[in-house]
Amino acid sequence: MTVQLDAIDRKILSELQADASQSLDEIARKIGSSKTPVWNRIRKLRKTGVIVKQTVLLDPEALGLEACFFVLVRTSEHDADWQARFLKTLRERPEVQEAHRLAGDIDYILKVRVENAKAYDDFYQALISEVKIFNVTALLSMQEIKATTVLAV
Image 1: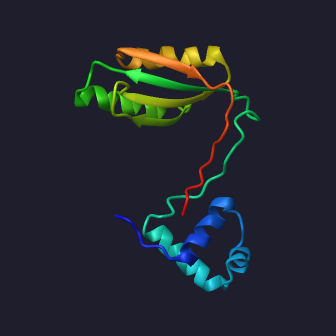
Image 2: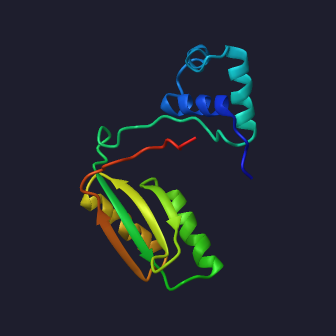
């Protein structure tokens, strides 16, 4: 279900995506409104599920997580039990930042953030010990060109 947003909702969402730590007063000033209507709109956006949660973005390199791998997974297993076990394993692995089920020749793609190649191998060994996988290809990102959590609103 798509939520209908007006121009003010979109400005509020843009401001929150830029910096969710801004005060209501700051947001209201920037969008040309007052504090109470902004607060009411934010509450409505939360209630309708447009705003899912607020969080903090961390710098992976500052934390020593310098290696980013994109892992392509092909499986010969497609039954519900295998899928449930695979998804449970992914959700429990903190190294997995993203996981997507794909259409086409590759079944899943994972974004895995680790310290180095040894840490990736540890992740890989743990993954294949949990679930049977037909083929895994790991691609090391040499340079992050663009990364954002901002959605065009």
